[in-house]
Amino acid sequence: MNNFGIKINLMKVKSSFLTNLKGANETKRCLVIPLDSSDVFEGEKGIYLNLAAFEMKEHKYQDTHLVKVNLEKEGYEALTEEERNNQPIIGSMKPIIAIRTQTEVTSNASAEPGEGDDLPF
Image (cartoon, rainbow, N blue to C red; front, side, top):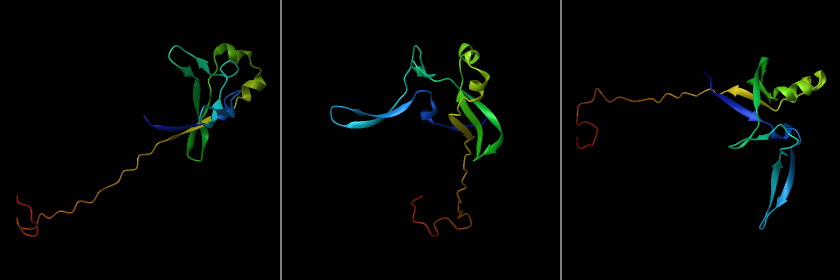
């Protein structure tokens, strides 16, 4: 099984927006995703966004899969054909390729013990 790097554009999640929230000491730029009007839902142990990855026929920019929101059956069936086809691509996946480096080891096997080193053993 391959390992994948996944990149998600959270601004593509339905109803998400950026805003500045002022705290006691500073103002911070925040991403807001309203739970009631997006595909994000609250479960017992967290806030979730179901996603599905689809392999692309033609890979672009090393990306092999596109990522879309995976809608519940009822929500998907309620959409028109046009709405289904226009579901936004919110991310992409590409394989993580491990870079293997070889370290060169120099051997001093031909030297006599005690020659050229100052190790006590």
